[in-house]
Structure formats: structure tokens, C-alpha cells
Amino acid sequence: MGSYSDASPALPFMTDNEYNEAVSIVEATAKALEGYKGVLYGQFMLTASGPKIVEFNARFGDPEAMNTLPVLETPLIDVLVAAREGNRLPDLEVAPQATVCKYAVPEGYPDDPASGTAIEIDPESAGDVLVFYASVDGRDDGIYTTASRAVAVVGIADSISEAEEVVDDALSVADDGLRVRHDIGKPDLVQARIDHMAELRDD
Amino acid sequence: MTETVLLVGGGGREHAIARALVEDCTLFNCAGNRNPGIAALAEEVEVLDTTNPQAVSSCAREIDATLAVIGPEAPLAAGIADALDDAGIYAFGPREAGARIETDKAYQRRFLDEHGIPGNPEFETFDDTERACEYIDDHGSDLAVKPAGLTGGKGVKVIGDQLTAAAAKEYLRGSDYDRVAGPQARLRGRRGAEYGRHG
Image (cartoon, rainbow over all chains, first blue to last red; front, top):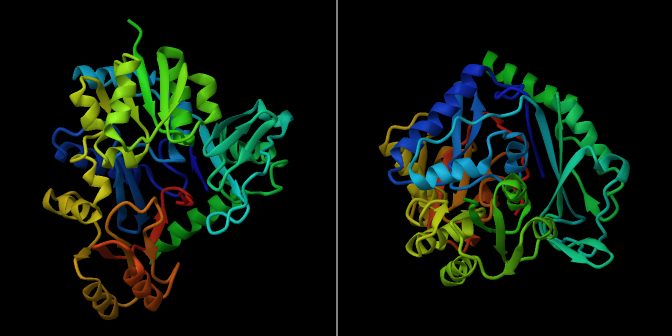
């Protein structure tokens, strides 16, 4: 239903060491996978004894690709061509900005989704966000929901809370027939994660 | 030389990939659905079954693709990268055997274990659902369970958070999968992001 990234590589509830530990786990796994090509995406749970592997995915995450690709400054095509040619991959440049991504899903999703709702984005906020479509029905008079995830809105700003605000503004008109997790990326939720990790580390 | 890229998949992730590529290449898309966001960026969208290797490689040949990017996991599991590579079109995405790191969770845990990758939680895999249920009985509540195979991001259930031990056993018994990966030791901590892992 949503995901966020910070202006620095680590997330607010982790230390730089914990972040680097997760990166080294991904690197060790990529090295062990002989002849592997494409994206290797490590999903972790942070514990008091460091990051633990939830799973590895063989492609970009969805929604997480919508957080990372918009702030990737290195042209993606350069990465693909280097991979094809067997050249050293370019060092990735990432803009130091936070992102928040929220998916709007049909009311009742996933058990009993209501399709056919018109998807609207507040026009005043639309210029400040990126809109990515998922499973939607494009008709002559607009874009409507199907039974699956409909549309993702991504805000990019200097902080998670600023990025969250522009996303929530853009989605403020989209609530009828659509469901959005308004809490994702809100300061009190992020703080709750920081507090929870502090508590686990103290145990 | 301008690259001609075939993007496979029609979700939000692929819309983001399309946006990241469109300025720097000639972009085509094939997917099971016509995504209006991708359609606005790509030269053409061909609606086809993205798990059909022949359909995807024919599409790539027709447009003279010099590269392909595969977004979702289902085409990877179906060997689409193998088919494209065999057709002489480099696929950015693992071949079917490489994609097992995602598509077969029991293999994934064994692989991590055999290569001494740090951060791999304790795990058990079972071919017999009843043995998995006995394990749940013996090891209490700090477990997560998952049927083996691709479950569209909906497979993992955490005992305690999402369901009781009894419901976990019902879940495994009711699954249409031959094998069960996990139960895995449940980790106390925080996931890297707030995801709803919903289809």
C-alpha cells in the first residue's frame, strides 16, 4: 500500500551501520549467484541484532521501484547497456531527496474490490507529484479502477514528512471508492518505528 | 546508437521503469494489460501473455529490440529471459534458474545457508504439510509460515501478528502448494518499509 525512502540511504529507524550491513548481505548474495543478471532486491527486517533477510526478489519491488527510480540520476539505460556488454556498471548517483509512495486501491481490496471508480488526482497538487498507473481501465472520459491496485502517487521532497504531505494532498480528492493508507510516512508513524527499534535495542 | 528497449509488464513498477528509460531510448511495451501511463510514453503497447516465451520473443524480434527489461516475477519464472537471450536479445532479468532465488523459497533459504550469507534466519522446509504443523506445535508462536512457490506477495503469514497457530496450520493445509517453506523463526523488529504486500 505504500513505501518511503529518506534523503540519506538509511531509513530514520536504522543506523548507518545497520544499513551498510544490509548492503553487504545483498552484495554477498549477488556474488554467490553465478551468472545472475538483472535486479536483486533484498528485503529485510531490522532486529536488535541487525538486519535479517525476509526474502530476495529477482526484480524491482513494486511499489519500491517508484521510490528509487525517480531519484536515480544515473540514466537507467547506461546500467542496462553496461550489463549487456559485460562492462563495469556505472556508480549510481542518487538525488539526496526523500520519497513517499502510496497506492490507491479499490474499496474492498483485496477480498471484494469494487471496480469502475473514476480515479481523480487533485489538479492543484498534481504538478507536485508523480502518478504511476497500475491495473486501471483507460476509457475515453477518464481512468477507472479495476479489481486490482489502481494508481500510485509519489512525492519527492527534502524530508519524508514533506513528501508525505504532497502525496496526501494529491490523493485528497481520490477517496470515494478508493482506499489509501493515509498513515504511511506520517511523522507520528515514522516516530513510532524509531521508538520501537530503540525499545528492541534496549531489551 | 539509440537502443530499442522492450519493457515487459504493465504495472506501477513498469510505469516507473518506462519513465526512467523513455528519454534515452526507443521504448516498446508488452503486457497483459494496456497501462495508460506506459502507453503515453511507449511507441507501442502489445497486449499479450507475458508468461508465454514465444509471444514475448516474437514481439521483441518484430520491433528489433536491442535490450529487454522484465518487470514482474511471473515472466522470469516462466523463462522469458531465457527465450529472449536465446533469440539474441539481452534480457535484463535473470534466467529461469537464476530467478529461483525468488520463486522457490526453500531453495532460497538453502542457498543462503550453503553460501554462509549472514542475516539468514533459522528456517525449516517441509515436503509434508503435517510435519510442518507438528513443527508449529513444538515451536510455539514466534514463527512465520509460507507455502513454497510464487504467491503474488501474499504468501507469508506471521503467527501472532496475522493469525493464530491453529489458523496457520489451517492455512498450510488449505494451500494448493505441494511444499511448504518455513515455518521460519519470527524476527522481532521492523521491516525496511511499510508495505502492503497486496498483489
